[in-house]
Length: 132
Image 1 (tube, rainbow, N blue to C red):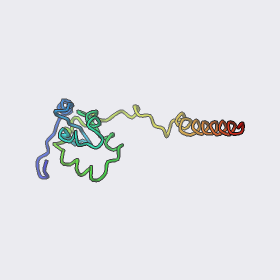
Image 2 (image 1 turned 180 degrees about the vertical axis):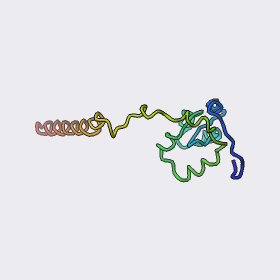
Image 3 (image 1 turned 30 degrees about the vertical axis):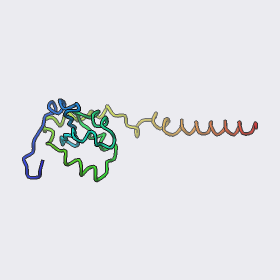
Image 4 (image 1 turned 90 degrees about the vertical axis):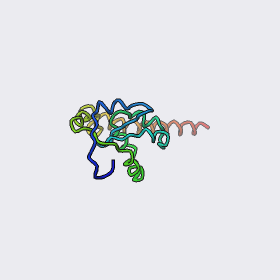
């Protein structure tokens, strides 16, 4: 899709049909990419793209932390944009995400449990070494 061209819109229903090795489309930031020809070249492996085929790969793409080169190269695979009427269908409800900042159990599981485990292992090691 060259600059100056009229934007081509694709519906979510249409994109979802392109979820196989012969035609693999993904959505990243509401842009539609045909990555079929890139499957075998993808540094993370074909299966990484295939898992996202036919759907929104924005979160996965951003979580990986792609380089500037990768982001520039991805522009070559843009075939259009997700139709504006379908964009709201990609929004996930906020209550489906577990927020660790507000969760008391995450504080325990992220700090106290590993800390206590480290102390126990250190004491066991010291006790074991003292017996020899």
